[in-house]
Length: 428
Image 1: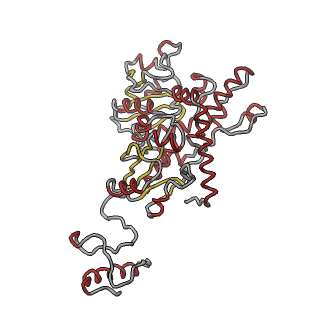
Image 2: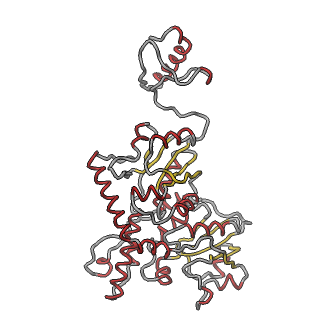
Image 3: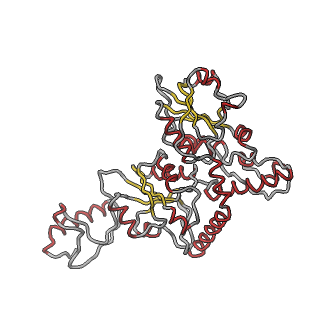
C-alpha cells in the first residue's frame, strides 16, 4: 500500500480495515503515497482513520437526529414531519428558528418564539429543543450540532427550504453527507392556513352584505363555494386534507387506561391548535392518570362559534390534539352536552374546563353542556396559563394581513429562484 515503515502498526490496522470493507462489498477511496495522515493521535486508543474518509457514526450510543423549522402556527403537518424524523433515529432534537431570523427570511411570524417553543416541546416525538436556531444551517452551527449535541443526521422534508438568494438552506448538511429526507405532509401548510383565514374574513364581509351561505362546509370537506352553492366561485379548494385510518393510528398512543385509572375529560373545538390549548391540556393531565379529549364536530363549532368556523376541519384538529404528549386519547366528534351515559361509558372521574375559552360563559347559557358533571360534583374550572384563543390568532393575522400576504409572495419568489437555479429532485 506504500506506507512507510514508521507507520507499520497503523498500516497493518488500515489493511485490516480495507479488507473488511472489501469483503463487505464497499469501495473506499484512499490516498496512495508514502505517507498517510491519520485523524487524531495514538493516545485515543488504537489506530485512527485516514483524513478524507467519510464520516462514520460511533456505535453503542443512540442515533440522534436534528430537525429545525419555524413551526409557526404549528399544525398536524409539522407534527407528522417530526414523527417521521423521530423514526429515523432514537432521539429527536428540534431547533426552533428565532423571530428575527424568520422576519429576515420569510416575514413576521404569527406566533412568537415563546409560544412556538411551548408547541414544539409538547409534541410527543420530540426529545430535546434548541431555541433561537438559525434559519440556514451554517458551517459554524453544523459543527455545534455535531460536536456539542452529538447529532448524527440533519433531517428535512422533500419540499425545498430556500434562502432569500435562492440557495438551499441545507446545502452544507448535504455536502457533509449527514442529511436525510422525509416526505412532506400534503394538504396543509402555515401559508395555506393563513390563506384560509384571510379568505374567511373576506368572504364573511361579502356574505354579510349579500347574505351568502357560510364557508364552513368548505373547511370541512374541501369544496369550493361554486360546488356547494351553485355560485361562480373561484373554485379554490380550501382544505386538501384526506383523513385515513392509518394516519390516525400513526398519531395514536395505542394504549387504553388501566382499570383503576383516574380519567380526566376536557372538550372543545381546538381550532388552530395553539399554546393556550397545550397549557390547559398539560394542567388537565396533571389531575389524573389518563387524559381523554373530546373534539367537537364542525357543525357544533359552526353553530357555537360562528358560521365561518372552524378554520381546520374535524380530522385536522383531531390529529393536532393527538400529537400532544399530554393527551392519551381523543373522541373524534364528541357531543356538545356531556351526559351521564357518556361519563359512565368512558369511566370519567373528572371533567375540566379552562378560564380562557371561546365559550367561557357556558354557565350563564341555557342548556349548560356541563350541567351533569356539575351536579355530580366532578366538574372543575382550571386557571388558563395563557390568554390566547383561536380568535386571538385570527386577529393577529387580520390586523397584519398585508405583511402576511407579502410573506407568502416572498416565499413563492424564493422557491421560483431555487427551481430556476437547479432541478429539484424529491426523495422517498
